[in-house]
Image (cartoon, rainbow, N blue to C red; front, side):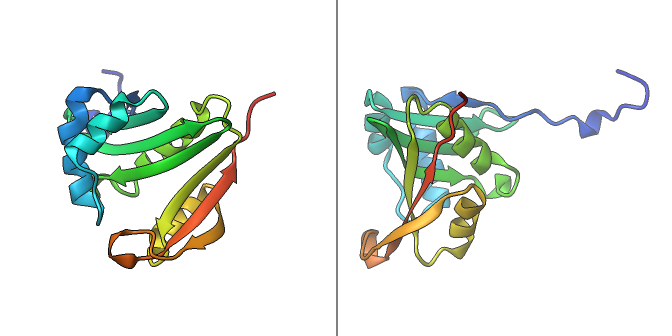
Length: 159
């Protein structure tokens, strides 16, 4: 170990990877912990199997999942269906990493879309920091009748 280094300060850089069928149960458990209307294990299995869908995950120091993002590509658009980060890993850049990864690996996507609960000011502010803008309201979008704010952003591509 180099002189002056602190082994306790070493932190693994989170890495984004594609989810596989074996991750479906852990994805459902994370969604149940983090979201008011979580997807089921079967829902994740179907999404992972879909050729147009992408489910990306971030693992923690242990192999446990600390975050995921599920998205679908349609023509030149990417739609973020679900994003969740484990409570202990929030405010550590995991959500931002997942969004940036999805946009960078969105194929020929020129625009990204998502919905967020209208009452979730923290989530709305998070997406606004990532340059998503509110483009509409979807009354009764969520189970229980909660409204959603539709948000979009242009995906910048290297020339």
